[in-house]
Amino acid sequence: MKLTHLFYFSDLKSEFYKVAKKEEHPYHIVAPSFIPVITAISTFCLVTGISLFFHDYIHIKKLIILVVNLFVSISLWGGLVSEEGLLGFHTRRVLKGLQLGFLLFIASEVMFFFSFFWAFFHYSLSPSIWICCVWPPPGIPHVNYFSIPLLNTFLLVSSGFAVTFSHRAAKVSKNSKIARGLMLSVFYGILFISCQYYEYNTLSFNISNSVYGSIFYTLTGFHGTHVIIGLIMLFHCLVRVYSGTFTKQNHLGLEAAIYYWHFVDVVWLFVYFFIYIWGSS
Image 1 (spheres, rainbow, N blue to C red):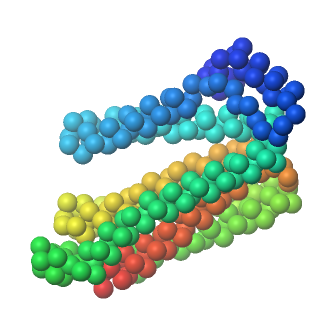
Image 2: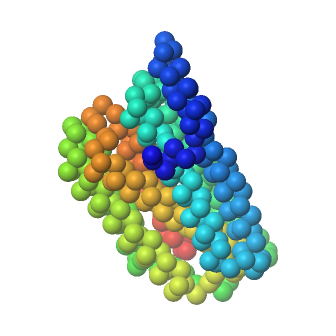
């Protein structure tokens, strides 16, 4: 028995699947599962834990446990969706619905980052008297955008080419080429996170140093979080490639991970050109 089956009502699951097979419509009747509830609770606990961490009520180790718990819940949920596809429930209508849902998710992420860029341009184009009408504010050193930020830009752009190579290979069912592209992308992503961690440790200002520090660390930090999520998605796809679950006709999970990774790449280009280059000038 698979681990994901533990979260199903076994009797209801089999009954729902029998009904789904008999129904003459292109939609999929989803079986009951505890995983959405667990994911919602994990998300609430993580948001609460972050707030408590910022006020020194919990240690970083407990926060890491909450993050891992959420990622495990999301991974199990993704595994269930993959299993439903392997069982033949992902018809063309269902696949279109999944594609539309993921595109709407990407659109929500665009608006999420748009809010941070709005705050950045609001304070940088019209600095208030509280920061001496200067941007960056006095006491904030200029960030050298020709060092680590430029290297990170090269890494993410290169990873974008690598996942594009995997996408083209998936259309002709070349699993070996898909795996090579994904492994290269994961490698570049890990290097990116490592370089960003090193940059955070070498910068002479922190998140509490005026509005500039708040916007800089919030925007780059959330982008780094999205890179980590993208790495998990790509690694999950790499495992599925070696298990042989992707086909020429059905590789929606891989396409979703690739689109998400391209979104992360584009956001970083905006971060590099506006936050690092234009914002530090």
